[in-house]
Image (cartoon, rainbow, N blue to C red):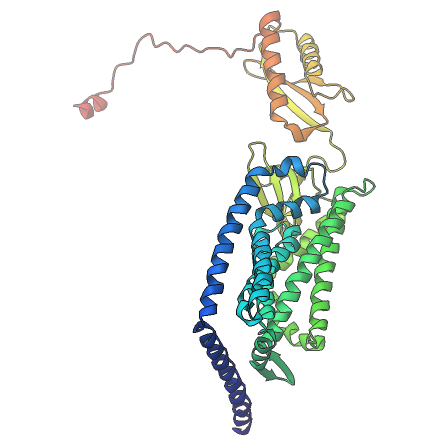
Length: 451
């Protein structure tokens, strides 16, 4: 049982010795260079060049108006020009160091100006990397990619890239016939991040093209976009793992663990995802619909893989899980069409003429803005109450997404104003006066209790 451990220890110890030897050699080389007076001379020239480059960059930024200069240019060229102006100091510094290097080589040994070459190459590499990453919109991703790429370029410029990669590759573990090194993990992570970024860019491009297809309903457009995006992500992961030499059949080991995770902790997540696909496929709820789900009422703004976003009339955003829309009752006001009926109830006294009241109410509703004329408003008497007659006015609108309460309020205000002016009906409620002429004498038991 101990032989494998001894074998692994025999393999790891030489790797660690190689790393220690590399570090000792690097420190010895740095110490030898620091003790040379030419090192400090070059360092002084680098500081002077950095100051001159900074002043030149500040002067350039104060004189160049990017808005007017790049007007009408393509987006890629505008972003590139912005990077060149913002990071112009690195370009000036690289040029100054290159010219100083030429002068140093002409007057003394080339070995006495090697730091100038290194500084010029590092500055030029950073400027080129910033130009290459200018197309990335995420600031965090830009910083991460820029720093990582510049570190690799710096190691290559210093001639340490092969040694560092060998050291990272030596830190490895073996399991199941597979060898996993730190270098392989870094490569896979970098390739996977790049592949996912490309998949996201491709997904956005497809979304923009699908949204222009007017023959497809909004729900079909959303379903197609999400399926294409998922396909791109899966392809990116598979391609990166295959390129890294990972045996894809070994991934079958994790299928059992994923099944157990779904069974215990991911039920709701998977349920909401499947419910979202069902909703997009059967078109029962689609973006733009007016829905009522429990106490939430509003317009569906977006449909995601886990929830839908419903915007209420008061500006609140309701995030409702997809599973709730499948298992509970949902009122879709615009399922087949956008025609929505609104009912307004009101009362009048018995002195009014019911037929004239119905005519006036229908005329008022028809003259109200946003009330549809395809289906004319109707008014009918619904009840003879104790003190008044009750009427119901029904009318239709075709744009419920603009609100229904505001239309109801306009119709009710118009009814009140018209009835008041024309005196066609008395909508006030009767006032009851209770008069007590003579209070009864209190009972003896009550008087005794009060005392």
